[in-house]
Length: 289
Ligand code: ADP
Ligand code: ZN
Image (tube, rainbow, N blue to C red):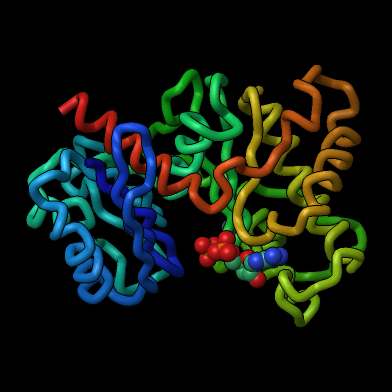
């Protein structure tokens, strides 16, 4: 049995899965403080102690995933103060003496789509979540793109839409992609949460423009096989088509991407992408030891 932890800024999803990456048990808790939330995590896995072979974690961040660093396995400079410099992997290791795979929440979701979602059979995949924030993870030839740290593609710069007067919402960069296009930016512009807006609200044209710019930048930087957009905002069914159309206009035939309907997609696994990805990473961690 493998364990999976999808540690999000809003909630944690813990799961137990088998060799076929089937989910056998699952529970979800709100993200409060490390003491409180980690206790719930440990209580969830405790009954499986004897059979648990490894655990995969996909965490909100920024996180330290440099194995040579003294703070490997920590959540580092997150705006969520209670979680700053929290030793996530170390805390798990105290309770569960098994290999632990450690990556970002978006990398885990990217991996889920790679092993059993829309990226299956492909090797270079970029996954974004457009929710409370925007995060991105990338696999190049099946390996996560990383260097001194993990990518922070959600904070790329975008050109302001000509009709958009919103100042932007990112505490670090104001009008970066996340500042302009994450869920809270939609709510601040319109006074209404995205899920409560009608599909013909003009804000969706602006939103799709920013997401299309993101897909454009991603295409030119990585030339991936597929770009997957998940997260709450992409639950708006009309968005995918709008993004595809705007993306095609931006690229203007400069590069010959795969057919856009198959190139810019939403996750096949839906909200399970992160959980399945973390299970698959746990499975790999067990094999590697
Ligand atoms: P999180 O990013 O916190 O893990 P979500 O991916 O659900 O969770 O993102 C939450 C954000 O997405 C909120 O800003 C919310 O208003 C927005 N959102 C959630 N559902 C929808 C929807 N169906 N349509 C548009 N926006 C949505
Ligand atoms: Zn930013």
